[in-house]
Length: 159
Ligand code: FES
Image 1 (cartoon, rainbow, N blue to C red):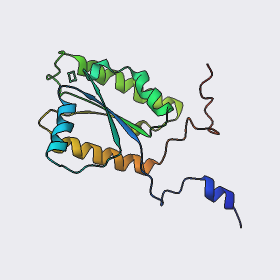
Image 2: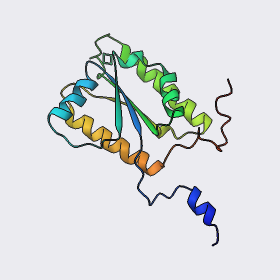
Image 3: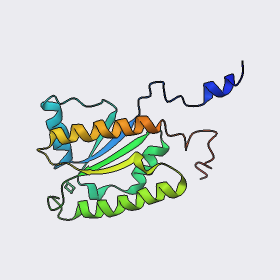
Image 4: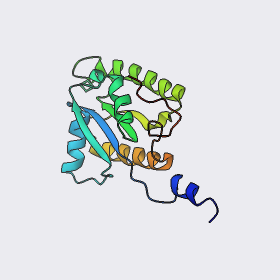
């Protein structure tokens, strides 16, 4: 009878938790890498939902925050390797933006490991599968993102 309500409401890491992860992939490299992983039947967790974008440099950091706010537990942004961006320097802009996003998340109290950035080429299906596997395992260990949920210390949307 002791602490029964606490046991129900607190997150039990021993129970299975399947995170929801959004992956923003650039059309020219990372999306093709994901496609190659699928065509080659490389196994990776089915926790990701892919959003194809023209270039990783086109991703507004607010997309990431909005995804977390709307209930995903992690976000991956993936683009072409340095020097391979089809828009010359989009991936360099992306790298700078996401370094700032990670600092912002740390500042507000969200684990920055929930947002990761990677380079994946169209020929790296295995690498794509490995990145998704690693990211999913890391977010499983972190547990669900509760920061924006009712009852958290966050003030939430005050608009
Ligand atoms: S086109 Fe792939 S990162 Fe720019």
